[in-house]
Length: 278
Image 1 (spheres, rainbow, N blue to C red):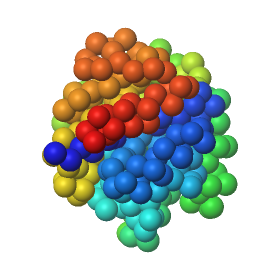
Image 2 (cartoon, rainbow, N blue to C red):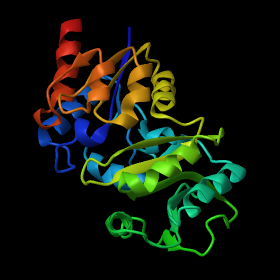
Image 3 (cartoon, rainbow, N blue to C red):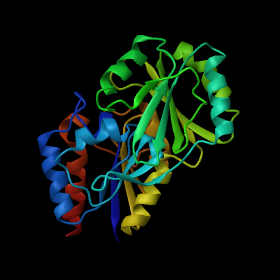
């Protein structure tokens, strides 16, 4: 039987500095040479994820933005993406505007490029998100007066917001009443802020993993994670693996608990399993 190994990035595959160790890079490239299908499933976009994966080759597409994209790192194009319906987008934005909050909106263009629109920054976390990505987006991070005014050839796929939980709890409750969408809500790995990420209900890390497994012809999925946005993917996997530094809810549903993200535990586990198979 063929197994797809698929791992979250931050807090799982990456080190605490948000980068991949040279040891993990070397092992992942060994897996590629041996034809072992490995992928990542991350909340990151192609803009923030691909620089961290530079120098690593994949025998499978990767899953980005919590399942919004199944993405080919070689062609730099989406194999598949999930669009938010316009009526659902308006309902999403209303949930934020009622609390005087102003989210980021991500769009995927017919030119295969990602862009982000915003109206204003409400806090330092939102401004920091902008500062870290504005140069990478090369002019595709733009300010607007109306997020619902979308140009032809642009497709809304994702809405997010960073803040302390007291600012977002009411928004989360209102979002639960929108049937066309799903969302992840969890603590950021690198700050005290919590992050809410909203996407079409057809998108999830679990669906993305299944789509990748079908593409590579895998019979089984072994998934790795550490945070709340990994729960659905881990729950849908044949083998759910939590790193030692995972939050308690992730450990509770895991079939296996391995070492920490700082010990290259994901690639060590895969290597051990593949060696045992002969």
